Image (cartoon, rainbow, N blue to C red; front, top):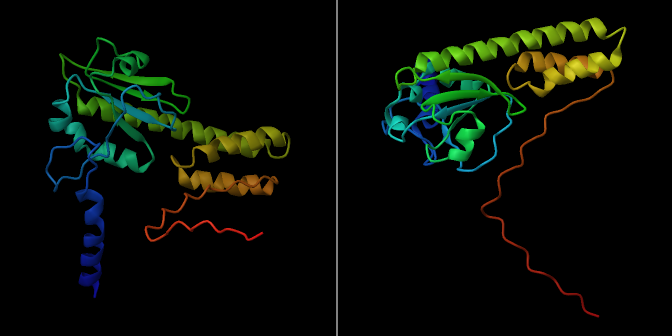
Length: 220
């Protein structure tokens, strides 16, 4: 029975790692567990997720062979809601907004406000995956430390400054995708302060069998 369960779990995970969107870069090897990179639509606004990692290759050829495609560290970062986007070499407007004009290849990390927090420059024309991974570790570590400070300060302010406590707990709650355990703790603390916060459920997918109702007419 145990072997059957293990086989079931293995088969269940295959679709997660075997399917790739046509809008995502990749090596073409279906057996590789690829980092969920997405191509940024040319001219699109800078995204404002809690943490964004932009990969700015010097050519599209890099998106077919770079070790950034199979990085275990970046794959794990994506599980913490880090959004990973590839900026097309022809997207000069986005490259300029990220301060990377004339510096490709390059990697850029931005915060929830779209502000650049870290950059990874190339070395003799090559972007080192290990340097990108280290930059992400540093960024997430800094966010973890900031979250810990907010939770500590929020607890101290509960009795003396309710508004300050609520603001700090809300800040942690707003980034709950990065640290879900702390987010749940902040949610419970806010509830004791009389503030209720809940996740907004994703809208259900459209029913493929749903048919449009014919308009009815009312006799006069």
